[in-house]
Length: 391
Ligand SMILES: Cc1cc2nc3c(=O)[nH]c(=O)nc-3n(C[C@H](O)[C@H](O)[C@H](O)COP(=O)(O)O)c2cc1C
Ligand SMILES: C=C(O[C@@H]1CC(C(=O)O)=C[C@@H](OP(=O)(O)O)[C@H]1O)C(=O)O
Image (cartoon, rainbow, N blue to C red; front, top):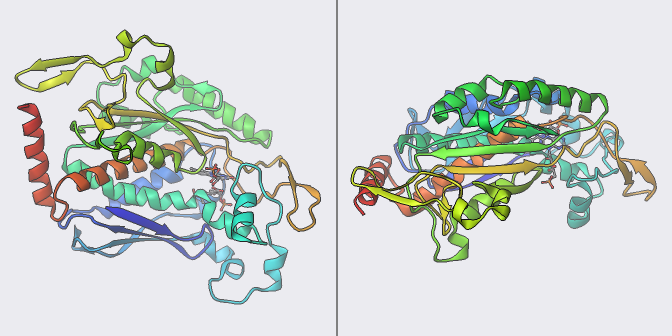
């Protein structure tokens, strides 16, 4: 399965094309729109989210709710385009209004300056329109399709928030959730998509303070995937290591600067005796582990334990109290451009990280098993899981 997205943040619409989905996967569009809504939400988002409704249309590859095996096309209109028609028209010639609204003062931390240099743009709007995380809406739509495929195979994926700015949720509270369904129920009703009420209140205060100061916040998200069988990915070549592919997918999210699996950076100061997931066997379940320090990966392959990753998002680069920059035309020192921005988008980014994990897992499965028809895929997948149990 591969996919592309196209579309500018304030252009007429965003589009995703997914190729390589099996035929006869039942798709619930309401479920895709529910995920779109989850990405829109989160304490600390800016005014843009009030304008958009983020309801997708599927215009190819689907008949009577079943995939055809042909490319699936998902479209999402940008409601904000109505306010940007003259600036963003794909066909009309440029008007004087365009030059007034040119962006020439690049924002440190955004793609503006380097994108302008690389593509020889004199109006940095030509960079920001596509580098904007508006595009992550399409990744969530694609991820929602991937999650519906994984659901048929018994795999569940959830993204949530661990930290916003200096406020971290309490790990011991996370350990009290026995199932992913319980954790989902808790994080879905949280304004910051976390599981710790006390931390949530402190996170909201931190966001309010940052907003008041014209500043922004980053944070840490976590993704857990359960029901993943051992053996996805491979140790035989570096580019086939699934943890490596997942790291790319996660760090490829706008503003993400790092990813860690299992105990992550804490592995550095743990002795080996405390951090390997020891191997046990019983006839009922076959080989199993009692711990998940390595986040579900050994040798670039899933090992049958839940996949657990954490990832860090830097603070939002557009500041209402702008940073120092230089005008690309006059070369004079100015404050960076600011139009409108989120104070933090960590809760939304948790949904994007969940989507990227689901896409990466679905791709690994569709590469390993027959990807033509859903029923055959499911039969092969179940047979493989039985084979593992009897190894
Ligand atoms: C969901 C989400 C929302 C974002 N919202 C904003 C925003 O409102 N303003 C902003 O400057 N950056 C925002 N960003 C971050 C920028 O898109 C990102 O920093 C930029 O594309 C540069 O890429 P890099 O940070 O990966 O280097 C957001 C990121 C995500 C994932
Ligand atoms: C539009 C979205 O996020 C945008 C991501 C973004 C950026 O620079 O990444 C900048 C802002 O764009 P605007 O100036 O239109 O408000 C965010 O709102 C979205 O998530 O749907």
